[in-house]
Image (cartoon, rainbow, N blue to C red; front, side, top):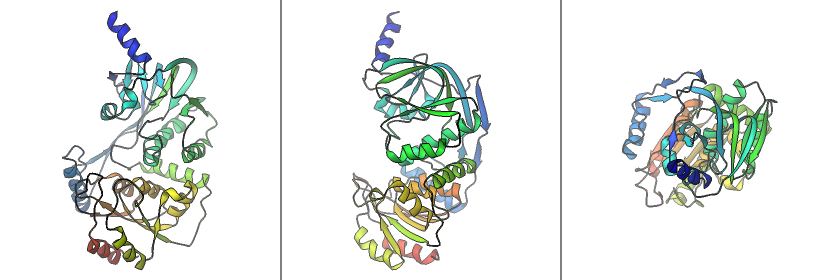
Length: 365
């Protein structure tokens, strides 16, 4: 009794120390089984370099398994407004937040924050994923919106989609684009300090894996076309070449960028700073782009909206991430990587000019 009362106090303060899995729930519906991607020798070498840089904590060189896609119907759960987590019988449902490691890394599940309970009748779903996707376009487009594909395509009954009011403009816009053709779905807003008790909750699986922009073809095509149509992307004969600068960022800056820019200019590359563009302008720009060069960063998320593109990504030698290689794999884009020097404490590094020039000469653009 004392133990139950103790956990009751913690839960009232928004603190959850225990978790559970519902992968074997009797109401789980699998719509697409898992499968394994094949890689060629060059791709495996890149994935091996990446795995080594992370001390093999994530290793796709031995095979990449696309997870099965499913929905699970849960009864009498709580939805936490501060994190988007779903709670069943006092335990956070791992499948609602992605994976166990994110429970450990995120204060959103363990912060002391009074959550006011509110009973809600009806059928609900949510793809909130905080703080990871609070205002991060990568996590929004790969961890959040793909999950709605599963709900909207496979749920015909009326359903309410729980979101937060303080979403970024591009999130509000693209959410509206995605929901436009699904009259059964309605958005409802939860407060950061609210905890909703709901009768029925439809839990969609995460589609993308950790450090991966790979989405199954039917999902990536659905998402691309929804955003293209929503922003009214215009066909253009103009083919652009862009370099995404992180000069104003705090981390992962290319230290010899000023030396690099004249070389890129000779090959027709223009410098782009995504933060200076509206999201509609970013989508239109990438739709028209035939070649992108960039240091690793969220700006490369917009490759999702390129019609066809070649990509050169820079990485510090000690931190090689696979997100956009796997996105290019999904989109059948030609991808290359250049490894720079070992990154400093802010992951800033220098890139080898000769390797960049060799790529520019060899890709035929």
